[in-house]
Length: 529
Figure 1 (cartoon, rainbow, N blue to C red):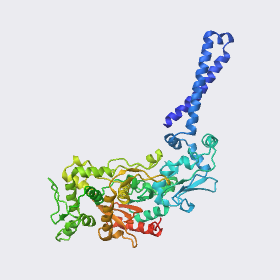
Figure 2: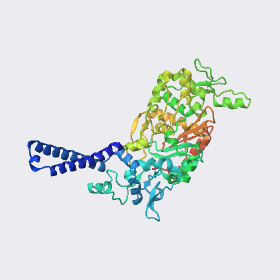
Figure 3: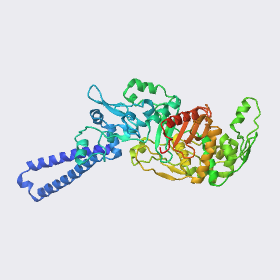
Figure 4: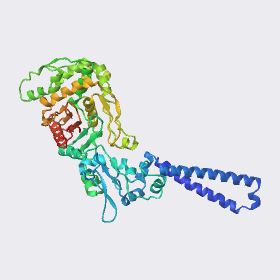
């Protein structure tokens, strides 16, 4: 695209040269030759072609300058070195959180002692993956790159009239950029990052009733200022095992472990199945399988040299509370590939997850990786069951788990995530009925009240959730906790994954508890808020 833009420039210049040559030749030709039939035809045809060609190029270049389109504008902003100098001479717009308050801004510009403007990032490392940076050394990433044209004041729709557009785009006259407003709450963004305590993983905080993202955290993070500092940048690159530049919240694909039991429960409830199964010491063996599926307690007892008697007869409520692998393995076998596959599809697996936005650059810059679930009908029963338990080849992003959990919390609507404040909510369809969602919400409340998620309890707040312990094959298991609160009328979803954090009811649930405690302190759960 940028190459075509340059070709247009060269053609424009070329047309001027052609016109000059034609005029020069005509000026030196004798009058009698110039106005002979052949000379006259040459004169008029060349003049008309040149004028038409020149006019088309002028119109095209004017259109590209005044309204270059998102793709071209992005390429120009990267390859045109003049743009970096322009940014220093204007006060770029601020990136505000949902409050619009200056003291809660994620980014703003301030004049330095040389009279040039520099960007400030008050949230530091907690905002690096989201806000990104705008640096001549490193390029542009995140929202700084997505909204560059808005922030420097030349974005179409933000100029008052054509004169203003012309002065901004052509004459390079700048004074002050335009602000952008996010759905993010900077206080929750900071609290979520702190709750990770430097561990690898991610946090998503979301309003389940709108799809608005309140916090989007990848840990470890990085300060956007690092892009302009060789020392800070080298420090980041010196930690490849931590991958601080990788956005785990959107791009991290993890086995979900027992979090997937929510999908199994949803499929059963939607099909009016509420079986009771016995979870005994012998576990459950799928058809033609060599490996026995046991509950997590079996391994714990076995390591201590003790006998595991099993949970006994369990209802679905009790099985979710205890996160019984045996119960949900039997449930997956009863549901079969048909019912399971249908529910998986409704929850958006194997499909692209797009933002609720009209901004193509945002879609491309903040890409959400696809959640993967192998086609159930193509698997053996053993593979299907292990997939239903969140293992085998199943992979999800923290964002996808947040959307999945929001669907249960809001009554069955699978919303698109949104980060631009003020957009109307959009849905990707109905994943389950409101009646089914209510039954599942009640089950999830019991998980926190008296089950595996008890560490996420916050006094005075009814948190509902599901733990997940995802085996990695080589290292310690990943710790998952997905949740919402209040259980009876959800206003907030919190999803936490801690890489190699061990038991899901431990590290991840405790981090979620800290985030809920902060949200409660900020009056998020007061009546009318």
